[in-house]
Length: 450
Image (cartoon, rainbow, N blue to C red; front, side, top):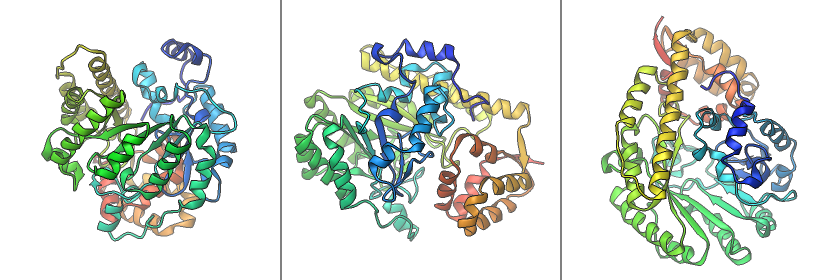
């Protein structure tokens, strides 16, 4: 996806450091591994929401504090201290290479002093309870999708009393606690942790990434009692497109709740956040999301979708991607206050990332960096060798789907996985797909008949 070198040039590091708070300029380029732990539904512990593939360990086999002092965390720190993005941090590299310094993901970790003995940011993505079935989501994060496909995967949470007790030990040291899902407001464990935070560390920033469709008196009472910062996922300001992406969602209900969250945020003197996934399903809707954010006085963020492949932009050819870029650049927006200007800059940075996909697509096309289906099967078998031994059924499904695609040249997914992902993560994601989903995702890698 991003070229051959995952180490940021020293010249760019110096240039970026000039945009950071002065007290951080001599520190590693990203401080997430020095401040944060993230918890995923299957128990995997990572460092942030932009690096889901590099696991430090698995709860409950590994405790929270053991993860904080783990050898895997030390490895990531060593890499990132050299501006080396190879341990699952590839997603953040293009923004640096394009000098989109105002919206690089590590800017989210520039605040607060570190504490050697404890993480100061905990990021919870353990809620799989959800009322929506979003097209880019899976049963990994949505109970509604689990039910619709009659899946047995991940139905019983591994997070209970012991987990809450371990979190409780760290609460006095926390500066920020982040909650996502699924839908956070449907998860009972989150309410236990929120009560503990409000009681024992009322100044702690509580960030909630919600789909915005759930709001009742219980939630309103909770928000009024704590230091909550709300971010709402909005992928389109067009009711029809929104409901095609956020299945089971009601755009009118979302808009009603957004107005409440905007009023609440203004009263609390904090900014409402709006986060939009940018993917092939909603490219033409992204300007409308910016305009909606400005109307609500909300801070905008665009998040790139890499998986599933069927929704992602990076697998498209240069012609399609250029067409999207031309459309996005043709749009105009009202400028004026600092927030509006910030949102426009975030929008421009998002376009720059798509332009980087164009560059990579052209490189593949010009150098014919493609493989046959047969070679892709052989290469993937080598990549997944250890995983196949523990789950041969999935490999049989993958092999069957690929063999039935036909005689095509394909994007070399095996090469991408080896370079940018932790193999276990990819195999787990593929295991959550039905045969039809596997087929549609691998179909995205085709570039033509041999």
